[in-house]
Image 1 (cartoon, helix red, strand yellow):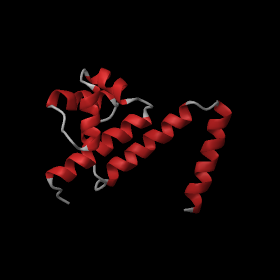
Image 2: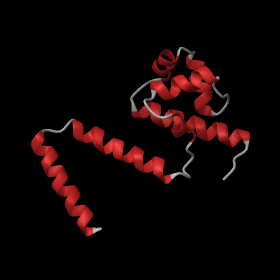
Image 3: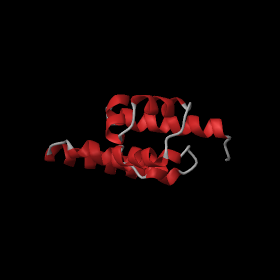
Length: 114
């Protein structure tokens, strides 16, 4: 689907905000990581403005995601699947060995049922 400029900026901004909040970062913290102002991040997230190319690349780097994820507006299920797999891996990393084994058994049961 093709979006107009305003809708693209809004969807892009929503993605920036979603990834920022997942990392538990404030707009100010993300701005510091991107060497820009908090107003730049706020404007980007609201769809009011679009970041420069320099900030654009710093956003992806600071959010620990490929740049294309910021432009995924829901059409590419491959990106969503990769993102979900990474979320599961991140959750598993913090578990004890016993918890990891239990989680694996639960996943196997779910996979067999569906």
